[in-house]
Length: 410
Ligand SMILES: Nc1ncnc2c1ncn2[C@@H]1O[C@H](COP(=O)(O)OP(=O)(O)OP(=O)(O)O)[C@@H](O)[C@H]1O
Ligand SMILES: [Mg+2]
Image 1 (cartoon, rainbow, N blue to C red):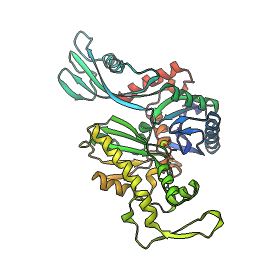
Image 2 (tube, protein in one colour):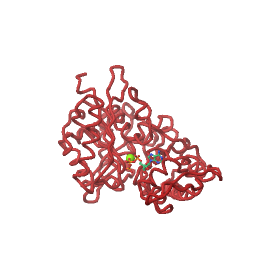
Image 3 (cartoon, protein in one colour):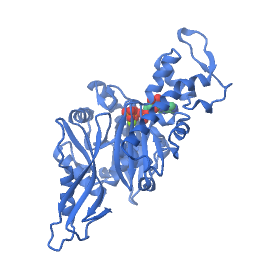
């Protein structure tokens, strides 16, 4: 492997932070994290650029920090895409098997997937992912790998993820202005799932909720594939706002106290437990019951999880989650989140930190880095030399993406 082909870079541009992770592919097939850069996110709101200059600045800072730590120059990144403009739906493609002896070839599979992706999209939207779920050969359903089987008719079920063309283009433009190319775009949920969900969980049925600053991104996996994606417009920053309003303090102070003493389930807090809270205007800090803080926070946690439950049941997956719910993203660090979710869902709940990498794994072993680490893992699993080398050209990107679809499958 040439030196510059050894590195895979994940760039996650969140509402709270911009995070760059540098991964190094090892000869034994493993992956080491060798660099991390984190900068405060400016100029972005829920995955969409609102101030170009500020966004470029944040991206530059995060990239430079990662370059410094890793000692490599970053040329191209796998970029995470998220926000409420991302939508997912299921589709199906049907083709007649072409060969004389009716043996299904890769080409038949490709045609079936092409048929499934031939949906008409509203203006201004583009397909980001086409993820095969399973195949039906004649009447036989639930087939994972149909190549080599015999049949007259091949059907494929896929999950299609679409996004707003301009939102994605603006984000790519910022990254380019920061001096790096985009090798591929990956939605946040797919990336985070690479880092925090096990293959067994994906097989048995699991929901993953990435609670960021502005939104909570949901993904539902079953039988090894992605079946449902949704974005819930509530995130960790809403907790901070509630605290700022409830305790009449500036946002930065509310954020500090949330991280230090917040708890999403007030029953977990002893009644006589107290915390010191800074006062405004240079007055002496006041002492208050920690219960009061958690009584402010709890309704927001309940709101998020009820919205998630509504989404899961509306989509019809409430009976499919045999492996329960995995919480990740910075918002999942808040004390008591898993416990309150357990009460609401009555399912096994765990907090997911990135796994599956070596090197400086301890630096990134934090739910807030799930997407960034996952982007590197995703790039590693779906790597093709073309995609790695692809510059910014849309065509190469498309080829890279198409190849990814097939890699995901074969
Ligand atoms: N130790 C902590 N305790 C409680 N909350 C925390 C902690 N650390 C981070 N958070 C919260 O996590 C949220 C940020 O999470 P994350 O870094 O995953 O967001 P992001 O990826 O930048 O945003 P998004 O995914 O919404 O675009 C913030 O609301 C922050 O307050
Ligand atoms: Mg995020």
